[in-house]
Image (cartoon, rainbow, N blue to C red; front, side, top):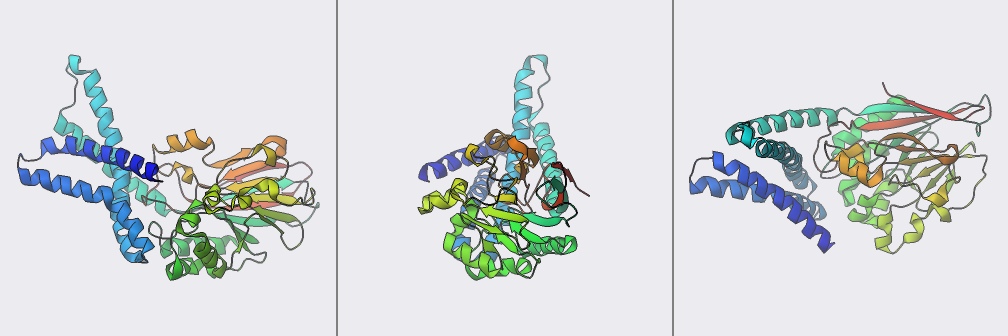
Length: 379
C-alpha cells in the first residue's frame, strides 16, 4: 500500500509539476504569482487525500464538496497534460521548420480543449441510459415468460456520487420494472448512517424476485462489515461465495467477492470454483465485480455479469483499462456459448465526468429459444 501511494504521489505530483512549468512563464514575473500558483496546485494535488480522510471521519458532505473540486481537477489536469504535451512534442519535432506553437498560444489552445472536454464529460456523466440485452436460451421452457433482470454496477455512493444519482437510477429501474435487481459491486464508498441514507432510494425498490449484490473492491476499502450491514439494510441479499435459485426455479444466481477480500483473510469467497454444483439445465448467472473469466469457470455459468472498468470513464484513460482487462464494456461471447457482460456503471469514481463511456443501467431479458443467441440494444 505504501508503494502504491508513493507511486500515485510521484505520477500525480509529476503532472502538477509539468502544469506549473507550463503555466508559470505566461504569468506576470512576480513572486506572489509564483507562490499563489504553487500553493493552488499543492492544495489540488492533495485534495483527494482530504476527501478520503473526511469520508472516513464521517464528514460526507464536506468530503463531497471538496471532491467535486479536487476530482474535477483530476480529469482537467489529465487532459491538460495530454493536450499540452502533444503540443510540446509537435513543437519539438517541427522546430527546424519554424512550425513550433508559441507558448501562450499553446496554453490557450490546451485550456480551450480542457474546457470543452469538461463540459462534455459533465453532460455525458449526467445522462444514465437503460441498455437492453436480450438473451435467448434453450434452458428456459418453450413458451415460458421471459425473466427480466436489471444490473447496476459501480454507483460509488459516497464522496463521488450522491443520493441524487441513486434516486435517478431508482426511477429508471421502476420504469423498466424488472423481475430482479442485481448489483455487481462498488455500490458503496461510504459507511454508517451516511451509507444507509445514500441507499434509501434503492432500498425502496421491491422487484418481485428480489435484490441481490456482490462486493466490489470499494466495499472492502470502506469496511466489509459496515458495507454488508448497509447493503442488507437496503434489502439486498449478499452473495459472498453463495448461490441462490430465483423463485420459479428457472434462473440461478452465483456470487463471489472481489479479490480484495483476500486482504481480509477470506479468499474462499472469491473462488467461483468453490460454489456448489447446480442443475445444468437451470440458466446460471455469475455475479462477479471484475470482468475476469477464470478458465476453470467455463461451463459453470451461462452469463457472467461484471463491472469495475467504468468503460474507462474518461478518454484517454480507457486505453489503460483496456490494456489491463481487454474487455471494458458491452457483451462478449465466451467459449461454450456463454456470455460475459461488462457494465460501464451507473456512477462515477473520482472525476464526476465521463467521455466516450456513457453510464448505464442494464436490463437483461432472458427468453426461451431452441438455439441460444444474444443481442443488445439501447434506446
